[in-house]
Image 1 (cartoon, rainbow, N blue to C red):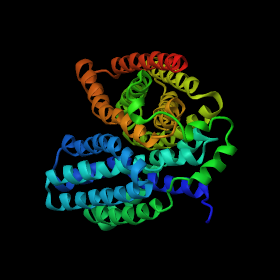
Image 2 (image 1 turned 30 degrees about the horizontal axis):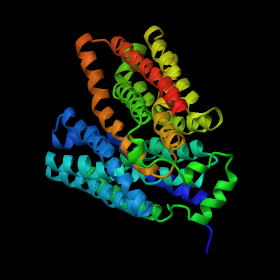
Image 3 (image 1 turned 120 degrees about the vertical axis):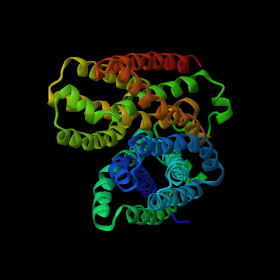
Length: 403
């Protein structure tokens, strides 16, 4: 039997996430959609929020399907749903039907996002028991970096082919590429798993042993980790939603310069997933997450007191690495705590935190800004939330040690 190259599996996972992460380029479509349809900003923005919400819900039950049917099946389902969502978006714009936009991009596309996001992560961890953090970070990095690839392509297509045709064409590209990538994502056989375990350094038992998802859900550790992820994403999404206006208000940047800053944030969001996850393989997950929130607190505090443009960009870039890190640290942390026996299921369940955070983070920021008309108070609220996450991380470490 032909031996599977684990790096091919990893690259297929990266490619799948590169396609799915194109959803982070939604801001590129926002103004063209409003100009062509007359819909207001809140109406258009809700489609993206709905897609992220459905991503979290979809991941919760698709994790079970990954375990039962395998990543090829869920990857293929993701390809069909996400492609259909984009094509339906083009149709919704053409017919100017807002309900079709919400159904297509928000619900169907969002379900496809969740199915695809969960597909490669637990599988890649099983292929890399010796470098679980780095492998997970590599796969999830594709999701964070995708907007850098999609944004210029989408802008070029919109200017040359038109907005509606752009969604049709990209939908077809996503379908073909994602279906192809899914065929290379497979679980290791029992023989391959045994060989991989021999390479690892004493942390391989949890690849074949560990808790079931049902057992893990009865532990305090799972819910502590859920809250930690929720707080990191809620604050991160809140900051992402106002990077441009905050850059103008606090640092005095021009609208053009602020737009460039928004683009740069995608780079740090992506590389942060790889950087922090790789670091966790060397210093451990608990210490890495504690360090993550200490950096979050320090950088958010600095934004309150230092308003120089260069420092603002540097601090926000570091904050974006921390935001991206939350996604890549969770799967190996779950594996550390509960084993990889039903990791896809557990990863799906914990991603419901993403769904909740997608609603809470931007809403919390909007509420505090409308109340105070200042981003400074909002930053103080985020410092409190990051501090709470730091305390919960310490509690999780203590709980896991005593378990």
